[in-house]
Image 1 (cartoon, rainbow, N blue to C red):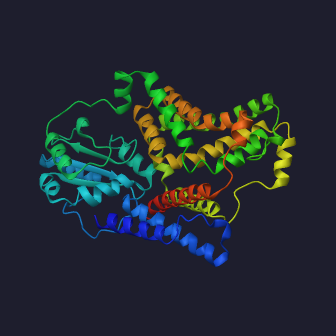
Image 2: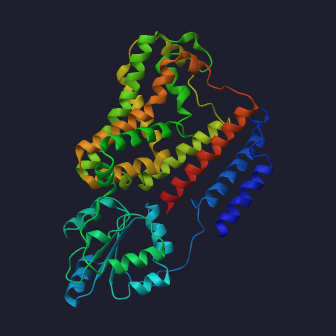
Length: 417
């Protein structure tokens, strides 16, 4: 696509002009702004190349969608016609991809020619979910495309819960004409085929992976100053081992409580975490946060605690409740960087509706996410060896700034859609 070509060209040009040059400490105000613009151009190019940022399409769907779902379903039953119900939202990336690519395809439109096509806007998720629940239709997460037989029964075996290419969707439409029992969900498949232990292990490993992302890295020095009492590269203020262990456990415990509660609430409500994580108010806030973190990497302001605060933290002997709250907040900040991981886990938990499963999977994820913080908090040697500077580290930090800006662009596109 043209966006990919433009994106690669833009990123390459910005890099050629010095976007990744390790000169952050040599730049004055105007040149620092120019550097930031080059880094932003690189991020925009990457976002275009990855399809995160797209040129708006003017193509309209050839399908005559209805929005009056109650009357439309009644008409379908009265006339003996099958129906399709597409539920989506402005903040749902997969929903928009379905609308732009699949439902504008001529073959898809032809396959749906005999259907009553219904589209429900669930941007305001809770009221829309309640409206559908009154019709006996459950929508735990988005996207969700459902098929109804001419007699009014929903075909549970034909439900679509993610983006699907036009040619695959055409086959789905044809298969939906016959009744099929509900297939096993991904959670049920994993538990049935491989067992709970494997599922928990995979989620734990996913948490470790999230802790190594650029979104979490900026939090490490600040967090570990509070946990261990020492600054990066300076172990002189380190607290005793036993106290570091207790404080590290309190910090990770805050993450565990936060994610476990999210898992339980998701299971009880039966809807995906993305239904509110991707609300415009949340996504725009996250976009601003990641842009600020990128600006910190570009040395517009230091992302660190004042020396006086560090000194107080080093002398402090309590504050475990505060550390737990700090851990919970750090977990929330880290979660959006793992968008597909966290949203995916909670969407599956919502579909399964099991409180024990929701608590268990999110507990495992939180322990994986907190492992890096716990290990560094316990080991003064590892924390003291965290890289502090040098040309190679500047390039890494600039690359992190690019990655953070790509994430910011992703959330901004969701919030402004």
